[in-house]
Amino acid sequence: MNIIFKKLEPNEISMCAETLISAFREDPWNEEWTFEQAHVRLEELMSAKVSRGFIVLDMDTKTVVGMVIGRIMTYVSNKELWLDEVSVHPDYQRKGIGTRMFEYVKQELQQEDSSIRNIVLTTMRGYPSVSFYENIGFRMDENVIFMEGTVK
Image (cartoon, rainbow, N blue to C red; front, side, top):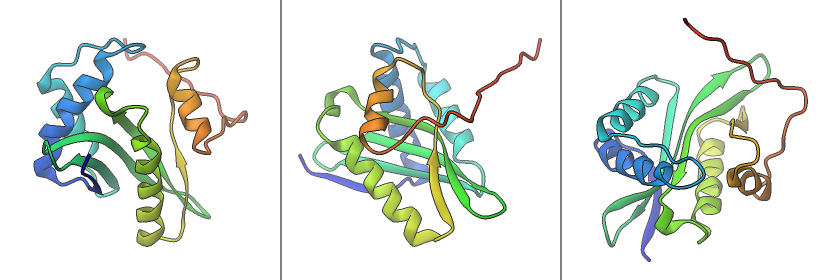
């Protein structure tokens, strides 16, 4: 497997959309994304000057097999990367790619701006993603409450 880690370029969003569709089609998410929905979501996420995207590219198949997309958020004493999208294609899961992808992201963030101190994300309680994030050093913050409100 010949894979590289790199920053996401606009012309790679279509490949990322395919990966998002494949990753979230599987258990436990079982989501049915259309290509258009996935593409629009990723374009929206990458549309701000604070947006950052990182991908894992399989050079043999010329496909994106993993991605991390988020936004740099500024606070009084530091900055954080708030993650909006993380996925690894099901055929490439459990091969260390996700762990290596996060190591790459941390390295890139440190080079970009030393005031970026944290990576923050939300995920569903009880999903396999929780143990993955814990295994790579994330922890649950007991001080934070996730809330949502409806528009209608």
